[in-house]
Length: 438
Image (cartoon, rainbow, N blue to C red; front, side):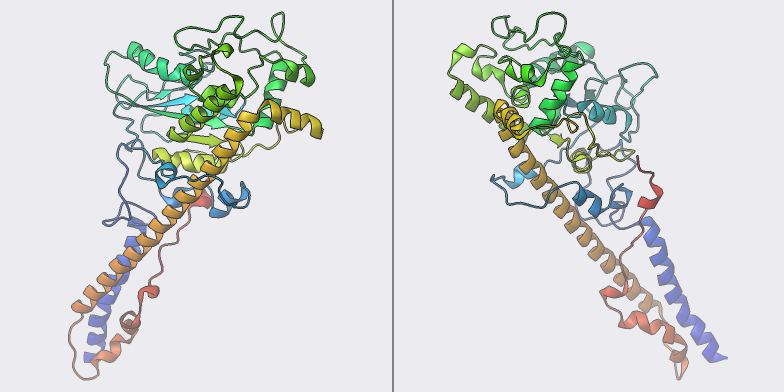
């Protein structure tokens, strides 16, 4: 009778510990920041989330992120840790604004739609059927947190570049909103492989696109006809051949990404006579690289999953549905000879250098962020094991002293006393199977 009673007394604290362990797994799953201990600081201004970013809310596995990129290669550029760490304290309830610089044919339309339709927000953007623009207001305030084509429209001109946006956006925001608060503007953009982007623009122009209403404002004025002559007569350039497209010296498709990211006021805007061509090219490329590096975020069309991953970690925002990689494009279907490809690369030699720089920095930022995240997960699991060990020790303190053979009834608890950190594996719930891929 005494043995049976002693056995029950011993099992009580053991069952209590097991109950705490099971409950803990649901309260504090691996990768969660809702526990009493944490690996890093929680993000401020993230009230738009249901909680800080959690690993097990991800749409993709590690392998998914590795599949859309090439093998690691040695870096040609010396980036500092500050260059690689791009987390910003974006406060949607404050005065922060994300400004999307949309470069033609870089996948910007798709990414722009993600911004207004696919982010998990406390107050989602209001996108009405049949309307091109959505209303993206801060929670409880009639102020926009997003400056983009699909939120504020082309308020600074059609496909406004860095030179136009940095001078125009603050003025426009002050006009649209009564309160002139001190705002933080976080510029973002998308880049694309120069040859693919060039071919895509050619196909788009061939179908009748012109962008002739673009303002190209610089130093307070648009370029004159002499400074920026058109490549065609008539309303558009429909049906243009690739050869004719390449032969126009004033074609803005040439090195478009560098031109749209550089500070054009440094080279006299569109006045080509202000300095020699070599000096102008050097200044434009250096300016574009510097502006791109200092942007809060940029993505690459060729790396959709990594683009999503880095945006989410940069702004502490989560997308509702996963990005998809579209490899079948009009540009991909163009059959190019090697001489034609080399000619396109020569016409876009500045863009080629910028993209090489951007790709290197992008992949390094991804690796840096991924490694840091893995380190934080390992630290959190170590803290979880420590916490569980402390709970186990507390359970042993509850165990009453017994006489005679009473301790034989507690044999089932011996495993806890002999265990090590490895006896309590970290939580391994994986909810990715419950997320529908988009």
